[in-house]
Length: 393
Image (tube, rainbow, N blue to C red):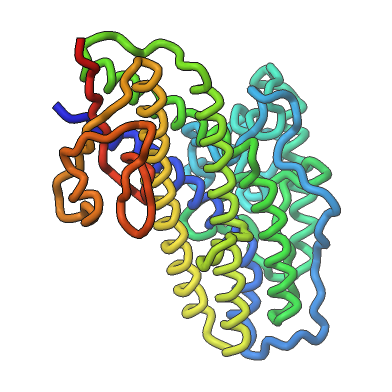
């Protein structure tokens, strides 16, 4: 009866990271959409007279800081809410009686329910559904956004980007902030749009937000390892293990750093971050003067590469943590040896296949090939498990 792999937790972590990458990709698309609009309108992407209707604010804030539990985290799943396109004029008027329904669609598409506005703008506050503050805030947001877009005639507001609704970004004035609107396409315009994207990504893909995503995976992996050991030995060994909480916290820290580097950079490796990858695509497209349709296709391809990288992080890191916690729990239970068990399929490495069925000591990791010594789960995406060898009585 070998120890099992934490496959369900791997899949759950993959789903969580795919959502993180989807949010990052939506923010990038949102920031580049005005540039691509200008790109499509003009065959000449000259930098002459390149101006912006809105300048970047000196500081950014994505949520009001009102405590760890009540803050708005754009990386967490969004509550079910209707799309703005599904709301009729009558429904919008019942929500915001003093605001023109088309203005809500164009300039405040996030204001689909009072609860949604409260969740984003007034986290932690117990406002009644009819509170005038909520409607006043939406009206003021419409005025701010309309004045920003009015500076560039013909620019379509409220347009969906890439099929994914990006999270609401609050500027330093605490009103939703749209990206800069270039009057013409060009190198300077591209650099400015990418600067906006980088600023927003830094604020969204930050340690506090990522910890909310990563930490529950660490806790679930620890519980899984405890259940597996209990299942194997037939005795409940899910008691607290000294240092286990710190082990999980360190894993969370490592994972948040991995995700941040993979999306924003610097990566510290041969693979560029999602942002650097996109920036390189935009710069190359500008030099080669390609059509906007081709640029859009290239960007979508880079988003796909980013999602794949998130999948790799999820698989590798859950397996690593499971291996580390398995070792800690077995040693805390007085188990000093284990039997190496592979997944018995074609993906098993040659060095790991050689170890299958051998008895190993937790004090001395075996040679897995390539000059590396690792316990099960320690090697990159290693799916091997350590079945405990119970001490003889």
